[in-house]
Image (cartoon, rainbow, N blue to C red):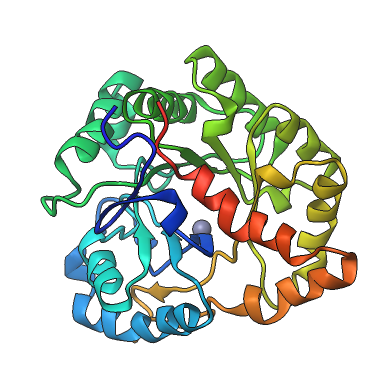
Length: 309
Ligand SMILES: [Zn+2]
């Protein structure tokens, strides 16, 4: 498998040991206008770069070197903007292939089989995204809480097929154990290990005990809404997972940023530094030492995004 053992950034493959302190779920640019209208004609790329570069530089100055940009196709994923920002800041930035959920799917997706969808996503891995030559570093999908409708069973199956072919990790906007459980069963059926799947927005599962079930099946548990006013919502599941010995399967991030198309000049932004300024220092009060923080912020993201057969 090409690039097995590496992490694929928008500027090419890097060694996992060089990924460093990483924010595994953030955004630089998002547009919720819908698949029929979304596109680069909706924003000025130079303005997006100029606006967002200082936010990345502030994080870089505090030691952040890895940055996973989670905006999917049809929501203004713009690989060229990410490459420019990676070159300007020296950060390792990842983008993704895959598709989100209704109403952010194009009409055509509903008429495709999982294999046909996967073929499109695998082509992005082989040929690059939108003619840029930039390759995805992971597969992004999304579901609603609860029982999955057919269209989302199709996209999750397509993600599994793509992962099997490319070695890329799958991340799913989820936040609900019932949906997560169904996803894990689909992955199992497709012979994709649960360790290749990230339970995004896991802090939104109201019963944090259920996250232990997901972790015990091998999934990555991502607590990724860290920011002003949400410390407790993240501490409760985090401490619970740590007490149960799952420190090697936890990802922490902020879902912060981002330049909002349509709210010129890019709307209100959330900085990428709250986790370093406030949240990680808070963990010391609960007995977490630096070694454990390094596991969470350095070792885990590097393992989660390493391309694996
Ligand atoms: Zn997000």
